[in-house]
Length: 444
Image (cartoon, rainbow, N blue to C red):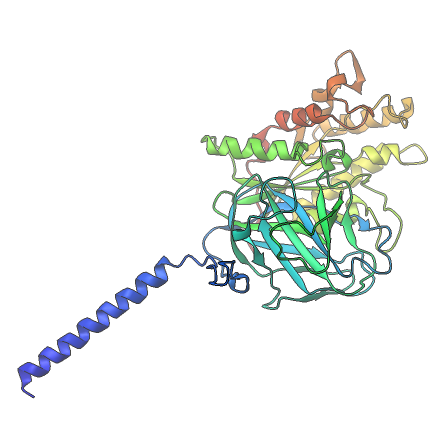
């Protein structure tokens, strides 16, 4: 072989390597990590949906507080049934992860199969089939959650639009004792017999339920938000008199307003909003049981507020049940000191706290002049600036101008304590979005 011929062969080989490298690069760059459909019926390839995190910030898009063990599940739990929870995303993301809780279980909970998908959008249990993703936990499709514990799923690549329903489905094959749940979800979820975790049609899900079970959080990897607002409260925050399935809690209104304002170019922080309200919750007193059902605000604050993903601001609307449910006359000093304790804990984590005044409730069966006096004293301390960093005055905004001890009639659901849909809208509308500025915790 001549030297010239050798150079020609070498040049050709180099050119071939360059071309092959370019093809490989283009192929990899074009792969966005989205699971591809298989040839068998073109169904989603669910086993390859786990994906490494890409760019963005992990934030809370939805969450709920575990409130107790579901009555009637003390022995068998929900063994042999699939639970399809319907949750509502407050902010968008390109990947997702789920938290499951066995806080009130008295034995290990085996989840042998779990999935996440976008709702088909018709209010049923049907999923948008191409979005169905199998959840894994440390690489395994099954997980055992110890009694009193919780688990975070692996990340799945899934585009979650804001203001969208997401389906989180779990299957437990064996009895597990009490089911950790959140009553008063104001959202219909579903149950099916057998393992129907990845059924996209929704047809087997013939049982409807007003509860959320096991699932306590949906986090998303977001380019839309940079942090999380955690709203911590009682049944008013829980939204128990809002229209079921309509997402008309005051926190839903707040999330929509903040998202719209940021999109319009307002100088406001880009936050998702999550709801940590529990009906009947008090600042000071626990419910019954061990662990306590409806644990006090002081007892659950670390778990339900401070530990939420990328929390920046906590909004507290709590205290009315300390007045209503105390068999004796509540001490306003103790309520205020309890609230200040929550604020100190938040400050220790670098979080800003916005607090709400307690709304009127004359006409409710628990109202008395003495209890009204306690409410007025607590509100006076809050308005004086000695409790929270900023204040939202729900009392002043929703009370009847002709009888300030009552809710305005069109803001009253009818029980004289909880707002109507219009009242919840008013709460979300009067919240000053600028109070969310100047917050944030140190990245650890």
